[in-house]
Image (tube, helix red, strand yellow):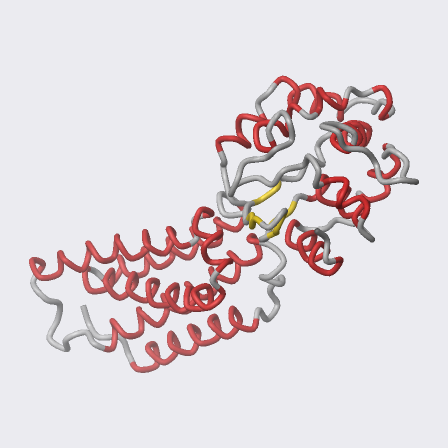
Length: 314
């Protein structure tokens, strides 16, 4: 193999710099703070930039006399496999709870993506020039695919998976595809079976994992803006740390927008009046119209969390 020209090296460095700047300033990119999907798109550009820098460095350090013996190059292939696996691990949903709770570590995470992608292409290039390009392209594609695949939302959580496969969930999904009944015609207790795996049959939740509904939902409804907030949580989900009764929860509430408006109204009416709870004085039960109107908002789970923070809900 011959050493790449200086023009090629400088071009790779410049393109890598452009990719990193685009990622850092999210120029032309969707706001990475609004969803994990958008954040993964930002990661893909960090990885692209680091990969291009790794190729540039590898090419500039190539011995003028040719490649090293294959025996010494074998170790580089191992690194070219391990580095991208480490990068993909950092994008795995299970790591997000920790990163979101430690902003400084999260910021360093972006630099780690650049380093790991640079190591990937540099090591691959040391083994064989074509391998450097192939592993770099593969890592960038995987990072981009993460935004539209496994990295969109944390999961799959076994409890959420179990609740999604219950007869109640299946029947509710089928019902939403047909003419929606009124809230009064829907059994809220039956719809709640979709929620019971996480929030428990008596609404007590699971410590450290899922917050309680019993005693807490009436508090939300009584707070200013809380009634609409509850509608948004059911329709669009919730992602971000919250504190309930002095305990912090930092998981993800999935969207239940696939249920009909009447089913959503029925289940929140059920939750609001079960386990000794009741609607705050002067408040009426929810109706399907409450959810139908809110569907036009189209919030992300992160925006719902931002709404909770802005309203300073309990």
